[in-house]
Length: 140
Image (cartoon, rainbow, N blue to C red; front, side):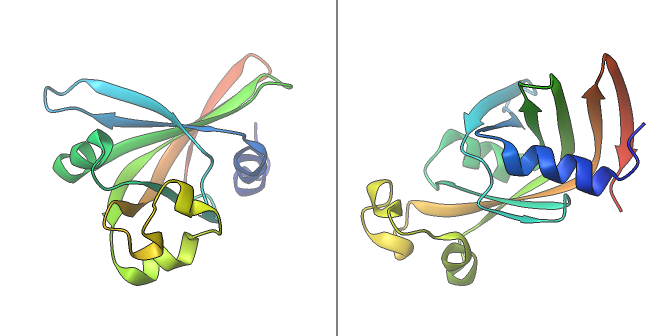
């Protein structure tokens, strides 16, 4: 059993080289996609990602905000799935908050590129796997 879920899960997120995000398509089927790790983390409740506003995933989250994010630690064979909702943010403050130099490679018009947006994931609960055991947890 985890003693400190915030610390244990936070460490897995911070060390992850990629994220798997899940959405629900227009037919109610789950979709998963590998992405870069979150650009910003507020505890384990809020995670921020960059993506293209024109992407299929953005359309799916706009239609149905239910989402999950999965992180894993290959070395120690452990992982965590967080379940919650995903918001699509296009306001200048959110875009500036997680912008990094070099992002022009993906968004040629810079931080104001209309195809650049922020995904804000809000976790409600999760499931942690380690040492051949799983446990559910709530996020406070």
